[in-house]
Length: 62
Image (cartoon, rainbow, N blue to C red):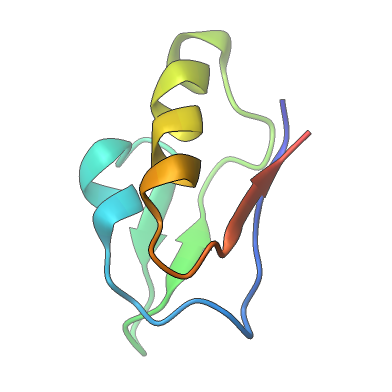
């Protein structure tokens, strides 16, 4: 699985960072960045949860 953030949609709510800090973090500007684009298998469920919980629908994975 590969995770991406749509920088135009992200508003820095940080829900994804709380749900999966191993993959997501806030940058100095307060917006989410992906720390590990290739998501390790043990974090895939957390990333899927982050996708559904993002209020801006800014996270995608394939």
